[in-house]
Image 1 (spheres, rainbow, N blue to C red):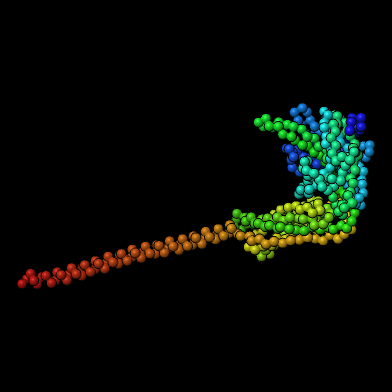
Image 2 (cartoon, rainbow, N blue to C red; image 1 turned 135 degrees about the vertical axis):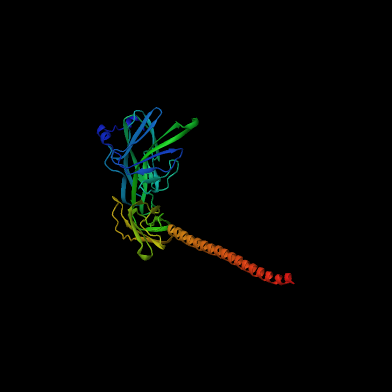
Length: 387
């Protein structure tokens, strides 16, 4: 697309900004999957390089100007249908920049509700492969002058075999440039901003979450009468074909009425077929031996998602753990050791005293015998001298 086809974005849009949901990544070579943040309006990507600053924004748009949407959202689209829409890319910097514009698939979400996208060099196979730009190409390369913007038309062509339910991806504008790192090594850095695409294909819908792979542990207190903390980790798996969030409660119960309940923050949006790992740490627990961890999920529709006319049931899971009161055991062992040591010391002192008493008695006996034998010898010798 040449410069004559560029649309200049008005200054008032610059002031207020127009990116409501962005995906920003910095990667060396192919790099990791992009990270989508739930940013407020006006968020933009900026990266300083040796010859100046690169800064740009991406937004849904009409044919003539950016609009107020935070994402591309399409509901109940029949397989085989084609959607036409527009994306705006603004070069906010002071130099011309070469952009690549393309779509890709989402691979999941993080605990912070960030959308994870395929790495730049990996080919999409779902909704990202359904998007094309003018000329039927899947990727545009275009140079945008400083303080200029473009609005590009794209189409989402659903295949006739598109599966019912939610499909998620993103329309990306990326910049690649080389920079020098330590020891003179040159690396290619890829900066990406994307707007999410959420599309629901018409057909039978299924909604459900499952708790899997629960693991447990316990951190005993240093004090022998203190309370400890349990660690409960579990996987939340979306077994349906629609996006779901929900509330989550983790509790631990044990003997003698020991219990602790923890209300965690709501789940991020879990994509169909995807899983996330959650860790909770219920505290205020006395280590009293065998305990049971309970996980309860109450699925819900994400904010802004199309309404679900199907029932959604709670999901739960349990696992056992054993809380050993190590500090108390150490104290008990020390007490037992001290008592045993005292008993042994008392026995040693008793034996030593017995030995001394035996020695004194033996000495007295020998002395008595000596005196008796001495007196007898004297009285027998006298008469012999007189004869």
